[in-house]
Length: 345
Ligand code: PHE
Image: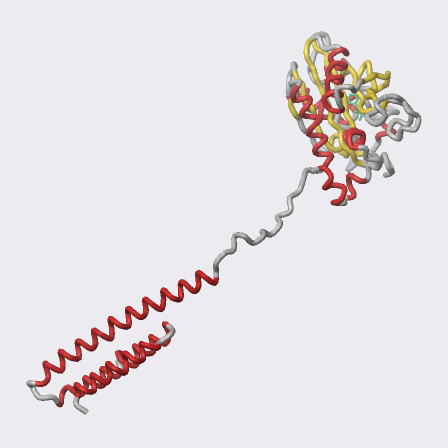
């Protein structure tokens, strides 16, 4: 076969093969077959040596035209196949934006956290700031400097979880009164939310750990009326405008005078219905203890009790939350039953 015919045959075969090729990989095989180092064009051109001097340029020119045709066709085809593949890929990976999303469950704060925050918020509105103290506390702060020396009989009811001679789990948030007065000088107003521990056996109304919000205000000329005023505002803001408070005399070593504070029952409205399960016919529910900061507690922190006076109170958080939501058993707070917790969204 004449070399020009061979070239023509190569071109025909090539066009035919490219005409039906379906993939980039097969196209590459075609390129190797026709244009590769061991391919058909190279093989044909090897025969050029046998051509006469007149024929050689003509054949050379023709071979170049064919090579260019092969290269251009291959590159066009490759681009076309790649684009086709991309379009198919995009179509198959298309995101269906109308499909329902996967549900991202959201949580809520624990009801006790919510109630502590709500209590604090009322007092923040009255100019108090929020303070903090450790749960592992010094005996000195928890008892001694609150006028409960080592031999004081009132320690018995609170004697608690000791780590050693010095440290214990605090039995109330009142040690933060001392910590605050050591750091800040009057006028000062703080609330202290936190967890406390007592050796109480667990039942529907008792737990070996619970929460309190402590309050402390020290300034010149603070009297019991300021305490009553603040707590009345608190009770109305927290439990409703119709709520009233009453003070009963009590004793705490670190306040003088001391009181326990009741609010009108949130369940029976204070009517004292003897079937009311919240107040058991009392009409009142105890919510906190308080009083005027004892002068010796003030002077123990370097505050002159002849110039300054103060009030303090400690609100029971669980009790408050149970009254607000009608919860009958304190253990619900720590059972971690989501059916209970999810009600406080
Ligand atoms: N710390 C007391 C208790 O836990 C409550 C209290 C706080 C009383 C502040 C007076 C002043 O029972």
